[in-house]
Image 1 (cartoon, rainbow, N blue to C red):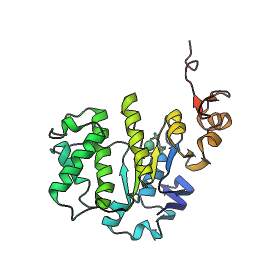
Image 2: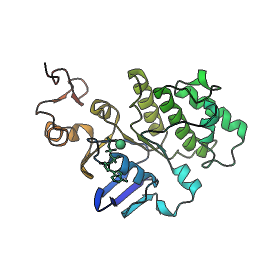
Image 3: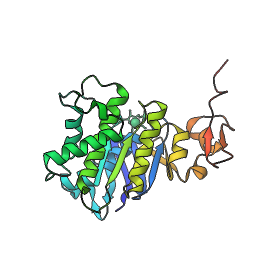
Image 4: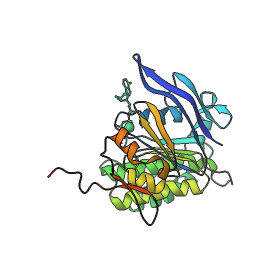
Length: 269
Ligand SMILES: Nc1ncnc2c1ncn2[C@@H]1O[C@H](COP(=O)(O)OP(=O)(O)OP(=O)(O)O)[C@@H](O)[C@H]1O
Ligand SMILES: [Mg+2]
């Protein structure tokens, strides 16, 4: 089942924040959305998730308009990790993650739900904290517990079946992670795609985007500026026009053939 945006726009106070966005997200594929601050990436992801209603165009999940789906269908079809999700409630990590399945898998028993939550906490490297209160987590831990919660939402919905999970929509999922946890999170996203789910992630690090994504979408001033495989999209010309990098900053890695940017000589002396 594809997730498709057809000529989608979002306009507020006479300003087009996103306009004319047409994209097909495929199950089993990982798409990275890159672009400068304020380009409209988070807005696009919220439109794709149905959390924000498009002011023009349509979003389709399979052959249904996203606006016609029940909350349970929507919760099973896609889950979204927000760019910034606070945690104020008094729950243990295990309870919070288990809640991720409440709408997408309402008939799952509490014991199975809590067990699955424990497995997900292991996957995000937080098993040791399962019975701890969510208050007081570090920024990186908080981001990973939310990741476990959104994975729970999709995996609980297909638990015990041979159906593929829904779309994982991640807004800057590694922004608070150290290098080894960046790797962990992106590997979890890749594993989700390998299991037949679709992944769409907003990411600022062009090197990680080139390394992990099958498909890159570049947003610039509310529009889709370019899209395609990393080696076709991340060119010097694009880096110059969209990110203002000097020509020659994007190089091609000899062993992998992937584009990369090195900041070594970009700092003023
Ligand atoms: N409700 C709103 N009213 C007015 N402007 C808005 C509203 N929501 C978003 N914007 C503006 O739309 C633009 C796009 O916002 P968005 O959050 O999608 O950017 P982004 O590409 O995710 O940026 P970042 O990389 O900084 O997260 C920004 O300039 C933002 O200030
Ligand atoms: Mg954003």
